[in-house]
Each structure stands twice: as C-alpha cells, then as structure tokens.
Length: 127
Image 1 (tube, rainbow, N blue to C red):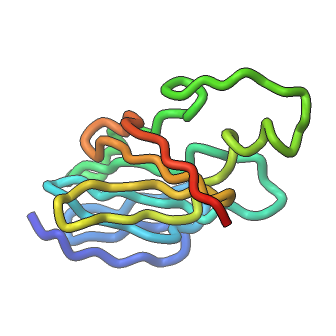
Image 2: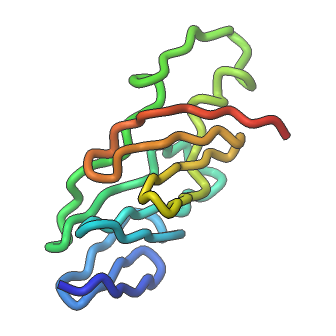
Image 3: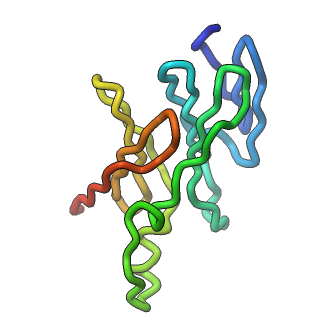
C-alpha cells in the first residue's frame, strides 16, 4: 500500500486504484489508510457535505456527516443565517495530533473523525 497519490480534475489516482468523483478534487489528506477527499463544488451548485473518506481499495467508506445531525439549530427564517450551517466545505486542516477539521465557506470549523466522517466539535470564528 502506498500513500502517494495524484489528483487530475475529478480523479484521485494511486498505485492501487483510480476513483472518479462527480466534481473536481480540491484537496486530499492521507491518514492511516484513509484518503480524505475534499471536492471543489462549483458556485452554481447546491451540493454540501463535500468531503469523503476513501479506503486503500478506492471504495468510498463515508461521507462527512451533515452538521444539522450533530449540531442541530433552530431555523430563524432568515435565509442568510440559516444557510450558515448548510454551507459547502472549502478547506481541510490536519494538525500534528492527526486531528482533522473541515472549514466551511462561512468560517465554521468542524472537527471530525477521519475514520467515520462523524462530526465531533463545532467552532465558530469571527471575521
């Protein structure tokens, strides 16, 4: 098994497999036999939860949990505010302790389990 990989548009390519996604791959992190794949979602698309875990055989084993499941919030009726929790992910951060965070367009950071895709912690930062 080799953790080296290549990204070509919507493909994740390793020595073991080639995995196609519906959208282009923006970033990939590799942790303990799992490729964590962040897809680059076009502006005109309503797709959310755009992070996947792929095992060493190229099989998608999870899709990141929707924040409304782990951190439900009551809808306010204001679309601008309500959409904050239903936003596309734009970044992945991995620290030295192998903790991984997904960052939304609105700056909300979610720590998640890279083996399951389950959200663990929500952090809201100010601009």
